[in-house]
Length: 126
Length: 367
Image 1 (cartoon, rainbow over the protein chains, first blue to last red):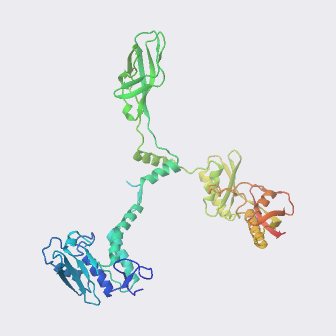
Image 2: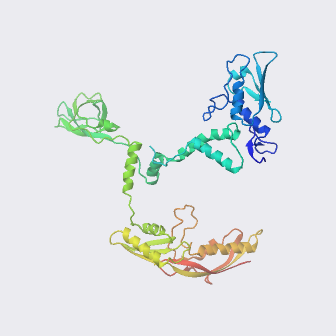
Image 3: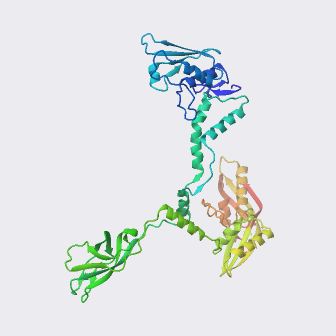
């Protein structure tokens, strides 16, 4: 068990059958916090309406990812990441967003503009 | 409006903060973050906890009403129909009869309580009438009513001269609660029956058993013992007498008595079923006899499952040999070969107005 435990993201059981935990400030922990930011549009949480980032619905391309970077700065204290985007070869309307976690390892989040327009849930970690 | 509302002074945010504080205390250095899954979970669960706490802080009126209907046996008033008297007149005095007359009085249906009979020589008769529907809607009505019965050409008028009255609506919850509250004001502590004296005694600390009996009018003897069936200290009995003096009915005399204890010897021989350890069965039988003869249990109803009667102390002045055999029938006993009470097989009579037994020498053996 970690010395200072937090639930792992996504929530689930670990190999030992217990709830999966991560060490505080570990890359896995920071990745989970970043994931929470990525999948949360502003105003989604009733008690923390400022949590998340402005959902990029109806944006023109390329996506403005500054709000996402700003959200990382505000909500993930140990985050130090690069965010980049690229268009899908077959369909330029689909944009992939990659979050590269510099601390250790790499956490990647994809976000396509057509999924984002459908609301929350358009992102998936890799 | 709730019957009882316990002040509830917290909210979901406070509950969430409390939960996070617990985690902070549990792990030194643990820091919450709005992106942490556990923080998200707490944030989601806190409103549920608030709902539960709010519900738990309210004792709804329905509980109070259930207390009245189920425990006090005070039913709802179902309402009454208005009543009155109708004068029913005929064309002439030839004498007429008909069944119950239905009528319409100011758009409220009434009917005569009895069949209509106008004796010969009379042109009218007064009959009691009752509204067909319950409620105050039937009150205060007078004047001529329209017959709702056809085929009575001789019937000329139906007149209600005095206003109808007595109708009342079914009681609603609010009215019932008010009446129940008034009813509770009438609840008083009184000592009337022998059981009242027993319950009052057992309500006092230090008294676990009580047996009251009216040996003659307005003369009650109350034997008391503690939870173990032993003698109650005199100071407690004096306090009980003072309480009786406060709550007794006028002119009722009472005596607070101690039990009379009689030691009982028991010896028995048992045949043991195969598969049982003889000594274990003997020990169980000895324990059963000791429990039976214990002053804490003597006179207590056996073989009943309701808690209502378990605190009763029945006056039992005889130690019956047949009951000894019943007691010895613990698991593993094939049959009772021999059993004696005080060295014999006869029943033992116990002296005193409130006899209790004590197990003295209990000896058992296996065949």
